Length: 270
Picture 1 (cartoon, rainbow, N blue to C red):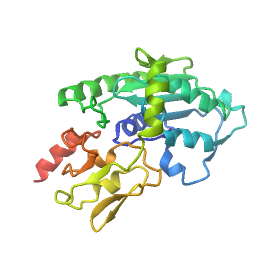
Picture 2: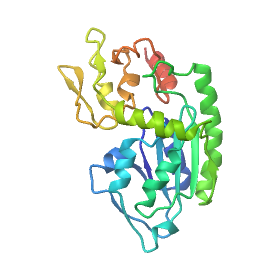
Picture 3: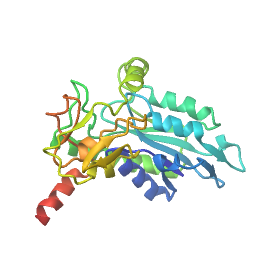
């Protein structure tokens, strides 16, 4: 089985490709958190975790799910092949080390580790921008080739594979910058909507993976209940660029996986 989380679609695409190659069950973590997070493994079944890196760490929703996860098997859990496939804009720091410690608490060993460099979607810091269209295409083409290689290894349950980009100072990025980011900057309180630009299409509500957006009189309102993962799906999917995170995103680009194809389809229909 494959447990995955995705906001702007990069990881959803990757997880779906792996599921197609392996024939494994694909389970969306936000939906699974609504249940008791209990699963029974059949003999030789692999366990995969796919998610985007948030601040050089696993997203808090993934860590919460693992802490609630209850797996049963007729074999010791460490017999089952367990892998992680993460997406990021550049590097992952010590994300896999943090994940491995979380998995060890429930009896799973992290046997193989993979990362995919995908188009950038986090734009809430002064030095963070979306990629150019040419760079987007370049990253996706490279990721497609890498994913084919990774899928072959996953299908074969190949252990001790490490195809990851940690960056130059992984400890600093994960445990200093990443720790601050995940403790202080994961919030929906800076999201705003330009009422004059909003066309009340509801894409912000539909795109939010955790149900943190509700339309009130046609305008989005965020719940401020701690559920936001700061994935920026509501911002990126807005066709009018009416949603912003503070003032810093007002002149930033937008991205979600497949947006270029959807724009082509929209132009054809019009």
